[in-house]
Image (tube, rainbow, N blue to C red):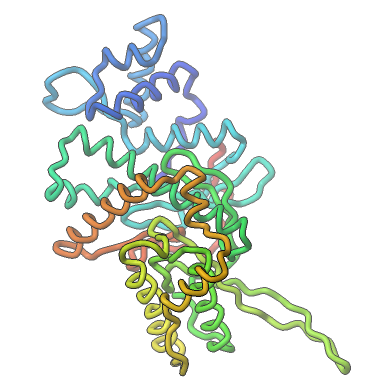
Length: 380
């Protein structure tokens, strides 16, 4: 979905209040009655509300429904995007938007920058874009529930990803630096690296393989399992290390994996924890065997051994910390149930997918490794 910020700078305070009023009404209404918009916007003049409604509708931020039983408007994804971008602007997180560098069935990814010109990544979760075509058939969603759900679930996915990314970053894990989160969007560091799936040769596959297995184990030691640890959700950056000995000094290249995409992350206490852990391990083993003709002689690793070490050491548990920070078990169960229903429906009728910070895990993404053109940058 294209992120068009053309109208963002021209919206007035009254326009934002009316758009926010539609968002508030969307929690309980698929089609928000015009009378409720008038009430929620808290503007004295009804004519000012109708004027703002006209402007927002022309910008496709809100929309009418054909053959509706009453006069009203629904919030579009564009409208939710604008509300989120407006909040990021108010907090000085963003200044301009650039090229789209990734697109999946459930997310869009853009290069953006702050007021100092630092390039960042904006990830927009869009869990309702494809999901409800199949999920609504099995879960009996009414239209009112659908609109509330795609906004709510997209928010939950963004909150979960940001919460885990921040916890991991603050504890020294190799992940992008989280900058900000609002509604269904996340702003994070733009990592100068390549997706693992695009790399055809590495000088030392065994060393890189060992690092990735250690990352899986390190996550488990703090109570976490990534759940989608594969070549689509791992970036590899090249770091220069100065090596010296008695005779000479030289600079060597070290490949460092960077983990992305955290909406599916689970606790080691999850009912299916062992299955997710084994799947993460097997994904890396299969990839290295297929891509680099490398097979490790060592069995495992196994979750049971790691959990035993975690219990004996009584170290930090990030799954507990994230829950305490605001992403509760109730939220996690709600989002997990949604994703499980989606996976079942897509398995029966479509190809199951998971999006990452640089696209979709089934090659549904379009990646652009070039720097964004100046002409493509929109000042917002």
